[in-house]
Amino acid sequence: MFLQTILGFVATAATCLGASLQQVSNFGRNPTNIQMFIYVPDRVATNPAIIVALHGCGGTGQQWFSGTRLPSYADSNGFILIYPSTPNQSNCWDVQNPASLTHGQGGDALGIVSMVNYTIDRYAADRARVYVMGFSSGGMMTNVLAGSYPDVFEAGAAYSGVPHACFLGAPSATPFSPNQTCAQGLQKPAQEWGNLVRNSFPGYTGRRPRMQITHGLADTLVRPQCAFEALKQWSNVLGVEFSRNVTGVPSAGWTQQVYGDGTKLQGFFGQGVGHTPSVNEAQLLKFFGLIN
Ligand SMILES: *[C@@H]1O[C@H](CO)[C@@H](O)[C@H](O)[C@H]1NC(C)=O
Ligand SMILES: *[C@@H]1O[C@H](CO)[C@@H](O)[C@H](O)[C@H]1NC(C)=O
Ligand SMILES: *[C@@H]1O[C@H](CO)[C@@H](O)[C@H](O)[C@H]1NC(C)=O
Ligand SMILES: *[C@@H]1O[C@H](CO)[C@@H](O)[C@H](O)[C@H]1NC(C)=O
Image 1 (cartoon, rainbow, N blue to C red):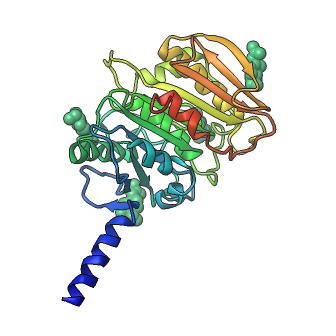
Image 2: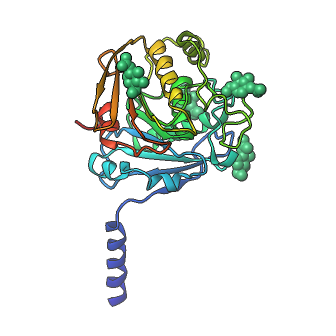
Image 3: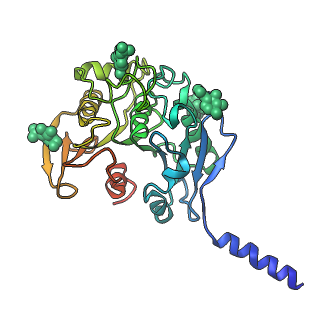
């Protein structure tokens, strides 16, 4: 009797410990054998939104879980976080891979979409409120997913990334690749960047993901020009023109670039900020429409 009471107490305590990051093994088609981790908050919303959060090169899903304050926002707002993790190519996403750059073809992109589908089915999540964010290689993959799977993602936020298909034609997209043409600021006309997105899903005429692009102006690993090129690309795809710069937003040293009225496309550039700007969760979640 005493033992049962103890065990009952332990079981209750365990459920009170709260949600944690969990690995999911069988989540569907996964051609590159990447891993899925998920964070479902204790008080998950009904019909919850989903954010896919992508680590940078050399990182893992578990590391990125503690890399931002998104989990505590999930606790208070009830959305679900998916943390994909790649063991391949120095833990960099395959953003140069034609399979990831084509809708439904394969690559890491398809595995990540399988994770989204799994989560929608398992938790009755809201298919219309699926978002993607990422840093560095994860920022690059954010642009890749927004280009190849516009039907899956409502919006994306890329930190220190490059345009969709910027690395196409390079052997890999790691910092150790001999070809850093893209990361050093490869420039193309807006129409050409836009065509690379449209060619990733020929015949698609639906809505396109809204995009938020953030970059440090002192980044030498992935040059800020890459973010200017990404803004050119999405400006062309979304059909919104540059309207104005707002200095001091969100804080001193930062400039917000507004396209149209800013609801579809915006950029943030930090003076003196290197490759690792800290993620501004509130700014990102407001843009996604998940907080006020
Ligand atoms: C990625 O790594 C996993 C685990 O080592 C391996 O099974 C898979 O074949 C790799 N995928 C690619 C595309 O290299
Ligand atoms: C995800 O779900 C959509 C809608 O059911 C489906 O069209 C698509 O093929 C699925 N993708 C994957 C990779 O499972
Ligand atoms: C280097 O990569 C770029 C894409 O990032 C590609 O256009 C170019 O052809 C590549 N150069 C060589 C020599 O492979
Ligand atoms: C807007 O801000 C960016 C980033 O600071 C800067 O590179 C660009 O020249 C500015 N554009 C205009 C029109 O002021």
